[in-house]
Structure formats: structure tokens, C-alpha cells
Amino acid sequence: SQKIEQNSEALNIQEGKTATLTCNYTNYSPAYLQWYRQDPGRGPVFLLLIRENEKEKRKERLKVTFDTTLKQSLFHITASQPADSATYLCALEGSGGYQKVTFGIGTKLQVIP
Amino acid sequence: NAGVTQTPKFQVLKTGQSMTLQCAQDMNHNSMYWYRQDPGMGLRLIYYSASEGTTDKGEVPNGYNVSRLNKREFSLRLESAAPSQTSVYFCASSEGTSGILADTQYFGPGTRLTVL
Image (cartoon, rainbow over the protein chains, first blue to last red):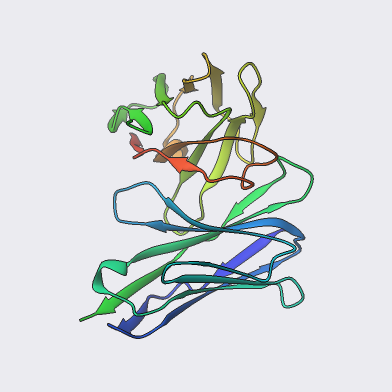
């Protein structure tokens, strides 16, 4: 069955450093991959979308890579700030429109001042 | 511009009771979605509506029904609540061009439901 793995343990990082979060998937040929931020008690907030034919996407301090050979996406936050502390979710959907969507359980990022 | 709104924010039900969760969006989006989020599990899609007038089952539809009342509103109904339906429920919407994740999804604040 289709499966996503995100680091279930929290990631602690010093302010100013680059945080790198991993999303690995199996039994999937995703057409779309998205990353979300979720704060406690709130709904997820969309950050970035990357398509199967794209290798990398950037938005301000955020960068996402998508390696369909390794079946992995990496999410980077450069110059991390305490305000970046949150849980980050990745999500995948197969090709063909309105296919099965799978969300990871998320990785909790803590940026230490 | 409120985005996606959900009511109620919290609800406690007894087993067997029914209730409807309401969701509305003011972004003129074609597609709307209902998810549930449980501890230790990723968000799971319950039902979706790709466009006004259509609804389809997602990954975990059993025990739920939905109504796409109009383009703005998409409700989720629990006919006979069970403890296994204790969860946080999120509604989302998107332009819906060619898939659930093909566009930005905007999520509501969630409804925290407890079934005793």
C-alpha cells in the first residue's frame, strides 16, 4: 500500500541554521507533492507545491526538492527562526486527477534561540 | 475575506447521536474536502466535492455523509456517532483544476469532536 514516512521524532535546530526535513514514500508514483505547516490547535497552512517533472521549488527562505528516483522530498528552511517552530506535513497525490491523497504524520521542528 | 470557516469549534456527543459539521468558503473555489486528523496518523480524506453538485468518497467514508449545498458550503454529517469518530475534522477548499493537490488547499480551523 502507499506509504509516506516523515521523521516522527522532533527536529531541534539552532536559530540561523538550515533545517532539513525528509519525506520518503513507497508504492507511489506521485504527480503532486505538497508541504504544509501546522501549528498546535490550527489547520494546516499550504507552503509549497512541487510537480513530478520538477526537481526543485523555492519560496523566500523555503526550498523543496523532489527526487522520484530516490522516492524522496527534502524541505529546507534557511536562516531558521524561532517563529518557524511548528509541525511540517508532506502530502502526495498520484496522477490522473483526484487520486488517493496521502499525508505524512509530520515532523515537529523546534528552532532554539 | 474569511477563507474557510467551520462550525462548531468543539462538540461532545454521546454514542448514537447525530450531528452536522458545517463548512463554508468565500474564495469561489470549485472543490471542497473533509479530512479527519488523529494522533499518530496523517490527515485522511473522508469525502470530497470536485465541483458543485458532485461528491465522492475518500479514504475513510464509512459512517459519514456529505452535502454540497451550493458552491460555498459543504457539510459533513454523522448519522450515528461512534467513539471511533472522535477526531479533529478539517474542511478545505481549492480551485480544483485537476486534482486534490494540484492547487493550493486552504484549510479551516477544525472541529474537535469527542464521542463518549
